[in-house]
Length: 472
Image 1 (cartoon, one colour):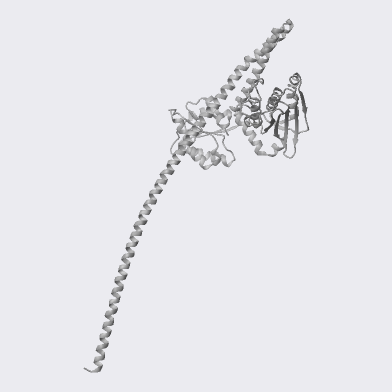
Image 2: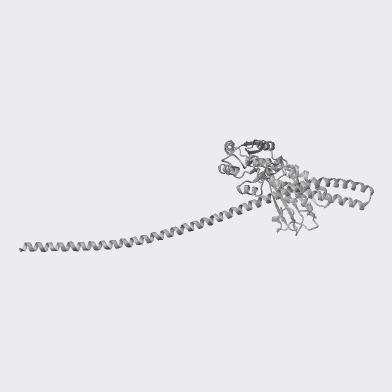
């Protein structure tokens, strides 16, 4: 073998060895990579399993939370419905109570007027007989009758106010003249108690008020002032507050005053200051509550300042007629309140698919104002949309529950309130032939404001309409 061949053989063996070594390294590296991939795969599977477990846990937690939320929401809705039903029953009971008081007070007032009239005649006749003992008896009857009549008049007015049955006619009026006429009624009584009654009037603009209402307010306040003032004076003054564009009526006395702890509840009916208004002072605590209610209806406000043993100052404020005229929203609000209280000029919408029932309802309600009817849900939405575009919103909605498919009264009511937000505050009254126990609660729970069963009684319908409108 030659040297060259030997070298070639050695070179070949070296290369072969190198190739084998490289193959070994590659194989080893592949094994490491495979092992690493297996480890990574195991780790990924482990992580994936953990993610699945975590996802299931999160889903379960979400389900638990949803159940909890649904439970809370359901409980809240249940409580809301319970409160709404309780409030409605309370309002209905209060409305019926005040309506009863209003009626019974009126019934008592008529014979009481006869008693007072005959006692006055008896007093005059006995005075001619010069029998002082009998005269004192007759005078006591007359005075007791007057006091009872005054109490009944206040109860009647309070009941009318709370039953939304007192009608006020607001018109531009001269306050000074009204106060002067009201004050004349108390001059003799003030002189009898040796009190100085002063009327101090300043030039003031006319005010948009109800004259009889303001007379009741002044009478109630001055009567209280004289009743609780043993000596001193009572000043009645008027003033125009230019910076606020309103007039003030101030009645100040030097009477026994009111305890500061009683002031927050002074406008509550049948409440008296036990620390100041003792049994020596006759009264039922209706004067100031009545005055405040009437002042509120006339868009005024009333403020009281008092100190024990020093006296009391009652101030009534009203916006001037100019201010009211310049604020169309105020005038519109006043007109609307008067409209609701008198049940005149109303915009009424009736949905009834039965022709005869629709005619009956129309005849019952047409004298209350403008009545528009529809026979199904599609026509209802079309009519409301057309009226809405013309700027007209209905005051009361009377919906039959059983309507042609796909509508029913509940679904239609929800759709109307959804499409026009203004109707979220408009009263919806359900009318249906079904009058089983629980029907009313179901309809109230569904969102109706009231319910009337067929056949419909006109007076009951009017009472429901009036009660609902006067809550606005």
